[in-house]
Amino acid sequence: MSLIIYTKPGCPYCRKALDYFNENNIGFTEHNAQDDALRKKEMLEFSGGDLVVPCIVENGEYIQSGWGTPLRG
Image (cartoon, one colour):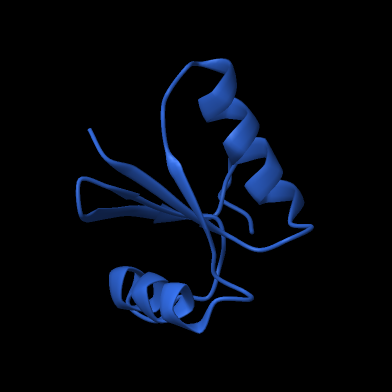
């Protein structure tokens, strides 16, 4: 499984998502979509232009933007 999480520094919802995956021993790759223009472009392609983070992509498929119930970001 390949899990990518696009984040931005200081985002509390990103932190909660990262904590969840770490606590459950689920491996992922984190990309900073705020400071890296290439990663931001990738994220927007996956999310259909949605700027909300965290943006979660699994095996090349867009899963969701935001974290929590309801989703926030």
